Length: 514
Image (cartoon, rainbow, N blue to C red; front, side, top):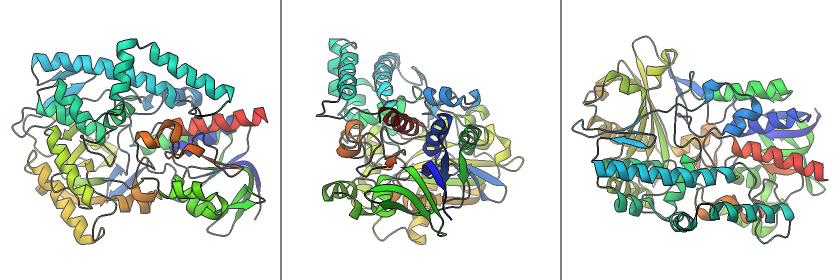
């Protein structure tokens, strides 16, 4: 079968859906091919036990860009809520963070936190501005690139001399030094450290962790929420917007290869043998899968293929889902607190110690954990009177020594449960079913190389001007007709839609200029 499209998007993750919708709104004929049976990539809601559903990978909405909401006229229910972050203390003396305020610390720490948040909000606003446009190329004479670089310099100067100096000093620093310089509260330092490393192969003492903290804040100033229906409802609304614009979406259609003819991408072939021709192929898959598997290294210059091969893209976060016959008892929490974001990160050194084993291919025996009880807000996710617990767990290295065997998974799950039991002693007796997704499982289910939700580690040498690599930072790959639109492109992962929007605008602008 042969059919001709203006553009084919490989993968119906949220960035692919955003990209396809914007292209279709501009009058393009667009086809989206998704390997799985439902759209959304890692942002889906699915059942993991009889009657219990959960956001399978991404579980909180905190980065969806306002520009994406505006361009696609998304409903206001997808706006991030302002959930309170509750950092648990074994004695029930929990710390609560919301916006620029913190409870459970000294007056001095409270004021220091307000100053810290004010500065980080200003810096993240600067960063967010450049997350929502293609990054300029370095060493170019192109007027648009030079203008963007000039504007970046001007925006930094507008911070003021002292703040510009602080921005440049902090951006490559580790979060451990900053929180120790500012705060006395161990829980406060632990909670900020967790936000700086979640989803990365980094610890609080690692360089770049202030940048990763700013990246998280650049979504909606760190505000997070649990959409009704789980994260799948976000993807479903994006798919609805795409179809309304004229996009054809076909699920259960894994792409086997990108067709290359006469030095350009001209279409795709599916695993079932169907061929679809197009003018432009846009991959929502990660850079390694796109270039090394779907296209093939032989179609790229050797140096480029080598750089893609060496991208650091090994995940270090697992996802644990628990079906519970009732809410566990956590000392110091009221019932309404179960609607909030709960974290286990007692102090910054605990977070670093949790990271240490992962450096050597071992999982953490005392991990850091981000917990939500989505069924507390949305009763459709569990049977009446019962609940779902969703947890992101650090650290679980993709390349575990000995591999993620059933025994290794059981051992790590037991370590996570033991850690939670320190705060919720009855959690084990509440569990009726569980599911643990290691990075290897995430790779298999969501087709993400290394199971890394950013598609490539988020560090300064793989960010902005050099994401995924220097010669492919503006969505167009060094193969005519081939583009990236996923988390491996600028700006990175998280359910933001920025990469998809930027890629679509790049493609449309290049067509206008041609």
